[in-house]
Length: 232
Image 1 (cartoon, rainbow, N blue to C red):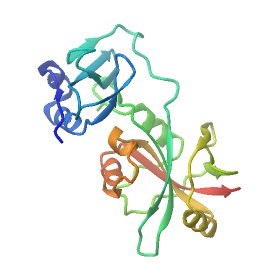
Image 2 (cartoon, rainbow, N blue to C red; image 1 turned 60 degrees about the horizontal axis):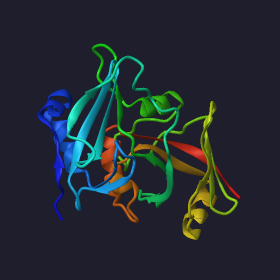
Image 3 (cartoon, rainbow, N blue to C red; image 1 turned 120 degrees about the horizontal axis):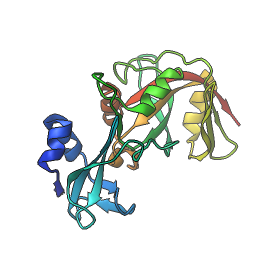
Image 4 (spheres, helix red, strand yellow; image 1 turned 90 degrees about the vertical axis):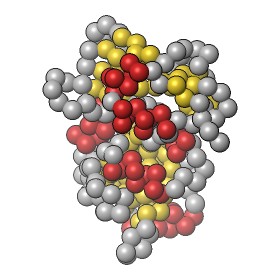
């Protein structure tokens, strides 16, 4: 099924043709940045909206009925970073030459970019995670280094709790844990924690392909680290 997504020339001028095309091509389901309700570009027209203030930009999607595709400028301090992002947890099994590695995914879909002088723009959430001890890895198939000070706790029941040395990243998250995955995690006593940004269709898919996570890793949208796990 085709999608109907409009992206204005001034948005393309600001973000570049390649990034604009990549963003446009992966839009299916979305949360409208204007009205806050869900939309689906396969069923109704959508538009890309770039919100900018000095040093900060946010690329989002809106219903065509809510807005035109445009660059919307904000004054200093009018567009601010959220204090937190909504993290969606999921367990994964990562294939390796030595068997399946248990992984815990915490992902969000907010696309925010910070610009500082002549430096390349960056995702502030990913940069913060790296500062706290997670790592950029070259591909999904490469084992991540260990991340000191982090811990994941699963249980009782479907409860998920993840923290670093400095803060709690997820408290009382809710996630089904298959018995086979729990057995893997119990055997190793540790999991590969993967955190970062995924496109909406992958984040909310029932069974997304591993290749989608691999793309996010290669693009620098996701970071990882091996952390101890407690199962209750």
